Length: 375
Image (cartoon, rainbow, N blue to C red; front, top):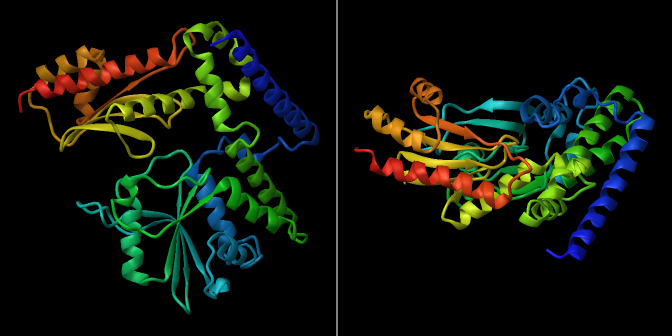
C-alpha cells in the first residue's frame, strides 16, 4: 500500500473517531452514559436482558401497566400482520420448551419469545440472535411445531442485530416462511415511537430509553462494520504492522479487532472448502467427526467435535500433540470425552495471513491425523 493510501485511510478513521468521541463526551455530560443495563454488563446477554426485556414489554399483562400499548404496534409495524388479533389477551412467554430435540433434529427445542393469540388462534415466534450462532435445523423445528398446531396462522421472526438472514443449517434445507427483523432498525424504531407517547409512566419511559441506548451501542451506529474491516485489514498488512502497534488510540475500532480478524479468517477457510453454519465454519472428517473454527467469539477458538469414542488413546494423543496440544489438555479431553478447543490471541506482531496460516496448520494437522487413526 502506498503512503498516500495509508494517509487517506488514517485520516478517514480519525474523522470517525473524533466524531464518536464528541458524541460520547456529550452523552457523559448529560448523564446518558449512566445506564443500568450497561453497568450490570448485560448489553449482549440474549436471554437475561434482550429476550426477557422484550417479552415483558410485549406482554399486555406485564407490570408496566400499559396493557397492549407496546404489543399492538409491534404486531402491525414490526411483524407486518394484517389479521385483526386480540392483543389485549395475548400470552407472552420466554424460553418456552417444546420438548427435547429429537434424534432427526426436526422437533423440540426452546422458543426465545412466543406470543400466543386467541379468537382467532395465532402464533408469533421470535428467534433472538445477538452473538450465538444458529443451531442445526432450529427454524425448521419451530416451523414444524407452528405448522402442526396453528396451520397457516403463525409468523416466525428472525431477530438479529443487523437483520441478516438465517444460515442454511438453521433452515434444515426446508422451505420455511420467516421474516428478518433487526435491532438496528425495527426494534429501535418501534420502541422510539412508543416512548414518544408515554407521559404517565416515568419509570417505564426511563427503562425503555436506557434499553434503546443499549441497542444503539450494540448496533454501533457511529462506526460501520465495513469501515472497521477496511481499517483493520490495512493495519495488519505486512507494511503497516508498526501502525497496528499504536492503533489502541483508535479505541472504537480496536475493541472489535479480534472479532473482525476471526471473520476474515472464516471467509478464507470457507474459500478452502469449509462449511458455514453461522458463527462457526467446519469440515466433516466423517459422519461423526468434524473440525471447526468459531469466528463470532471475542476469544477465537478452534478444535474438533465427535460423537464417537477413541479406543486408541495413544494414536489420539499423537494427533493432538502434532497439533500443539499439551499433555494437560489431553487429560482434560479424556474427562470431557468428545471435543477439544484451542484458543488463540491476536497480537500486534503478526499479519492476518500469519494468523490464518497458524490456524489452518492446526486444522490440517487434526484432519490428517484423524484420517490415520485406525477405526
